[in-house]
Length: 135
Image 1: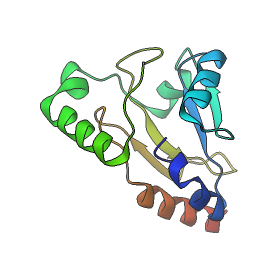
Image 2: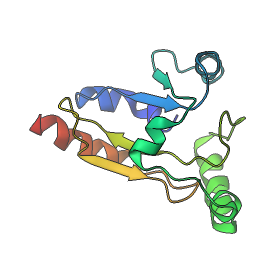
Image 3: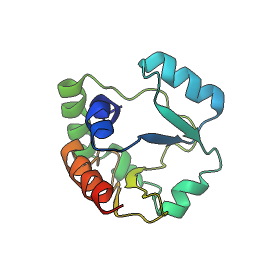
């Protein structure tokens, strides 16, 4: 959702957004409808093989519900209006943001250290712009 809010900026930079979820195709359809993100490319990986290949970790209890994580999550939710919804798949699976170039290389990767660890969109946009220019 955070990246989708700046979708027009990513598209202007020549970048296509895709999200990989660990649910099913039906879960992806429900997510699109509930969050009004028509046009967002959502891929599904119930076996979480892509998460493993990227190096995304399984969080500890503290990395999911520790005081710092809860405080950052609450602040972010109040600021953005985005709230955690029902989790599909492994509840402790952390994610990340990767930029994958057309040649398959990964010029940018941010793997979450905890449930509140998301890179700022501006950082991802700068990296996407650099990657698009070098492609």
